[in-house]
Length: 124
Length: 124
Image (cartoon, rainbow over all chains, first blue to last red; front, side, top):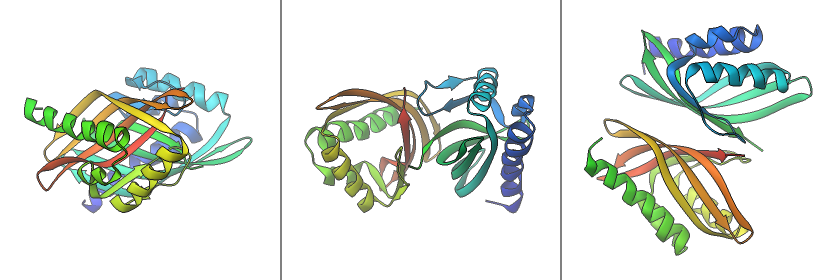
């Protein structure tokens, strides 16, 4: 992996942390997820397509009163126009913080690296 | 994806279903997971390395009294020597059945397709 790709992935994760969760700008998810992305949230069915994913995050952030999500990449492997990231996230809500681990399959789309498959589960 | 690759992936999943879970032959996990594989089970820390993964499955199958696991591929995408599979699994235990969804990143190792990163979570 080149430093440029690492910086590109970090920038996408920053958009999620700061713009989407931090400021509540769910339209910024356009720059986070590919158009045909799928997420697999724990305790729910898979959600397919960016518009449905925006609805999921709007509702989840509101229902759980999420105030911050911090992402930490544990490992990332580059495979051409795809990358596979293993990471951990701290989800902070008004009632406390919880740790999850995740796998994100990244794709380059329209010149940007975006989340294409996103699955997570709790650490404990 | 070629029919041959699809058949190869199916054969690895069959080994997990029939030999590992069905017959309790945890050494057959040598033919399921890569040497450096990692699993991300819900409610636990990530487990790295095939020997540790064998211990995990031995303990989980025994603690949960698992009698069968059936895997169903929902989608699979081939990227050279890697493939990304989204699937669902039915886990049957002595006290009932539960549904999970999963993402597996596959790698070719020693001529066989094996699970390299394996993460799952409950559907409900």
